[in-house]
Image (cartoon, rainbow, N blue to C red; front, side):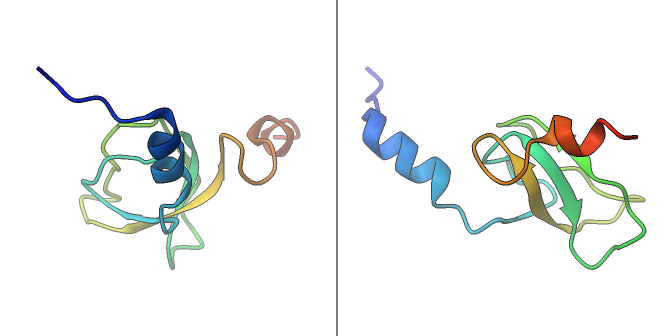
Length: 81
């Protein structure tokens, strides 16, 4: 039988990630991510649990721009575009 994590530990784990995630890792929180050190690249929306993508076939480190409960609302920043 599977063991279940308590709600408290799930919330703690979700909000305690370092904010940097590598290509191929599972996304810790849904939101708009941007590649570290690539000012020319667009932000990408990644759903929680999805694999973080590569850019031009190369692995990158992703930084959370805005996500659920963090930072400015994504709809506000994208509304003017």
